[in-house]
Length: 458
Ligand code: MN
Ligand code: MN
Image 1 (cartoon, rainbow, N blue to C red):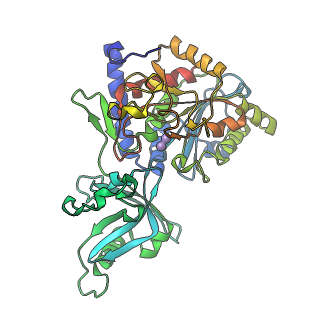
Image 2 (image 1 turned 45 degrees about the horizontal axis):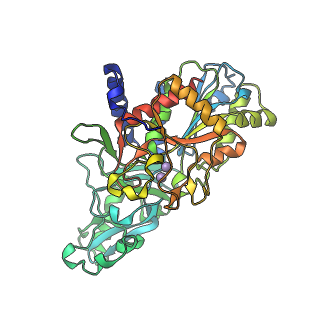
Image 3 (image 1 turned 90 degrees about the vertical axis):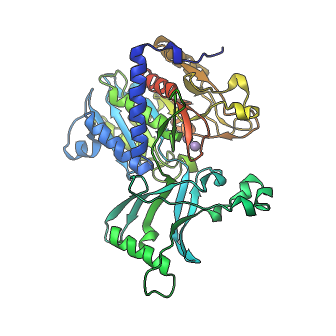
């Protein structure tokens, strides 16, 4: 039952493929630090690979057939891609799913204030974070400001070498006697996560001159007023690029591996598809980190609606057909897994834990306590997948998220299972999950892509 470290199993050609994939993955991470940026980048890659916007297909009254490649985006924050198979789509699709939102700090709607000649942006954290990890590191600001005239301004500050960055301060250790007595959850509290953005007063201004200067700069650069913050989505994320990690360069250190490592490898797998029997599908969704809510989260009907449009474009829509397509589908719901960390070994049960460089991780179930919130895949489906993976020599391991009763986590798997389709959780093992900088093994990234490719070919 024990899985081996896979690094030494590779041929020279495979190692070259592995490095190319990881290089492209790092590029994707740098281009996509928010869900919107990930969708933009995915669309660019899809169009380069011959995918057509489903909206154009609908507009042109085009009839879709086997081999056709289409994508549909939703509110710029979610995307679904399809390659039509040669079999009747009623036999079900092979679906890859992952999420493209990551834990971060969002600006509040009324964020800008000045205190003692320092200007700040107030934030509200998004997803599960250890707040103390977000102080004293360089931070960047990404997102959009939507204006009343209907225009939307893109913002990205802190990624270019010439850009300034931002920071959240922490109390100096010399005066931290009392702070260090606190529980880790309280050492830095949510309301203390305020982004320092300026200290230079506007000349000849009496009140809040530093804030006034910041507003002047925003007006000059983006033509926005303070009230425009009301309709903005600005996300504070770690500044800087994804990097190779380790003297042997065997790992990748980056912001947002959860869950862009599964999203990117799923995307790459469907972009590579030439001809398939079962219709191949890849969905990359938003809002997983806060419960898959909202119009762009997995609980929204947008995916079902897109499949209905797809069937209509194939000249074959009915409610019954749609239900059959979804119920007969198979899905790999991909999200990151906790990698065994020897520094915190007590949190893991060693036989049922994911390890770096042992391949893609399958979780028959996730959830907390008595598997609460879990999807729990069918044994028969797991057996079918084992056969597919072993045939293609895909390296995989199985795991749970830590020890029973230590905590737990959820994914989008149970939501797709509502249609009655076969769904299983799988994904890439991550160290320091949900930290500003997370780590994955390059070999596991490679095996994830190989797994998805094998799955789509069934
Ligand atoms: Mn995740
Ligand atoms: Mn997560």
